[in-house]
Length: 616
Image 1 (cartoon, rainbow, N blue to C red):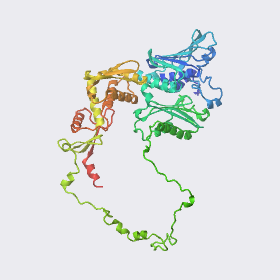
Image 2 (image 1 turned 180 degrees about the horizontal axis):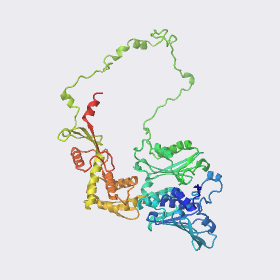
Image 3 (image 1 turned 60 degrees about the vertical axis):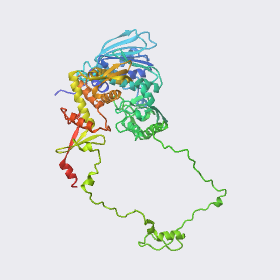
Image 4 (image 1 turned 90 degrees about the vertical axis):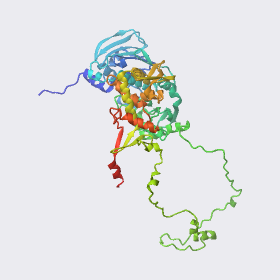
């Protein structure tokens, strides 16, 4: 029998490695931008087409490469960042694995143009599927320029599983944010289909965050600054009143590198304890500086997960730094002492001889092991009034209402029992309904007691109305008396632009009004009781939570998200007529039992279960 184990060809090995390093177009952007940072670039330009499927072009003004280095950079495990294993314990650069360019070249059409300052001409290399097509001198600017075309062209299974352009662009924007925030001194620009998404000038950390996430975030930022012998913590955290329902603006950076760390995230969230509801997340941009020898960044292929040698020591430092920052900015409630009154503190006597120390009285005949009470001997108590009170202690309770035994009330008559239900008379006439905790609706049915979740019921009603509107393509829209403008960060703006046509079909009148700015002039009649800006904000938050597939069932998903964003919130008090109307509309739906996302809308408690609970 012949041998069956053999070495894989380099092209196949590179494709396998690409599955770990290059997961989507955003991975290409991350790796190449990090290489540009390590090359000392002060300006980085990123162009993508079709969310990176067709083209990813990254140009920098870094140090460039020689012809030999340019060719070697596409080999596996070829890097200029480390030379020995000991260098792994002092990593301060970004790309050090030496797998990025080899993995990208294995699954794409790659063109490289690079030139050093001291060279007269640059180098051009063309590689397709790990095969070098051409290498020749070329005239180009100082620095490096990569063009990545037709990503995953030779791995169709990977290309098929890419999401829609909106989702892929959102991932690219996230990678740019993770690189731009810790490097505010570098000019970074991002263009999508020749339209600018980011044009970030050189700035400080706060200005860079505002440029990335919009002017509205500036007023919510609270400065954090704490330095210890173990770690230095600085950056910004958001005020609780600006917290959102979904995550997305939470960033940790260690020595300038973005990381994910659930345990440190918990330290920040506990600093907001009793300041936020359970489903809200504050924004934070926190930078940690520590000795590279205390961390291991070679844990995850994308280098976003880090192991710390002294995690247990950093956790309380991080928690205290955030808590202190909130306290200094009057975010944490503090005790407000009344300073108007004066406190009289008696002065000590001139001579300490005048001070009389209290006399300690003891009973020398006391025996704690005696079961019967012995009469007190000696002069204790010396005060005759105290002795008299001790003898006549029962007289202290004469004339008071103290009763040692609680009185058990006699059974009330039926008329007196009916007074317990002192609600409005209309509540128990006609259709018997009751709102519980401004969250549930209770109504009796033949088999028992029906409990309806009012928010989910409203979601189901709006969802089916929106679906009918999409089918008929004619939705009544009401124009606002005063159109409102609002600004979004580029990631949210890209999401809104991608669904504008569907929102228009649902009755919204929203138009672009400048860079990342929109004008809302009309809303569907179905959401007339909701603030239009709140509906749009909630809709965008739902989009971030649920990935909308634009190629199938997009309109149904948008109708469900819009119904969830427009439905009445818990805590809304409903009148009797509104409750009855809500129940009637719910049971007119085709599927009243479940909300659009499949959650139960109503539950019936059988009479037998109610009766059993009284038998215990």
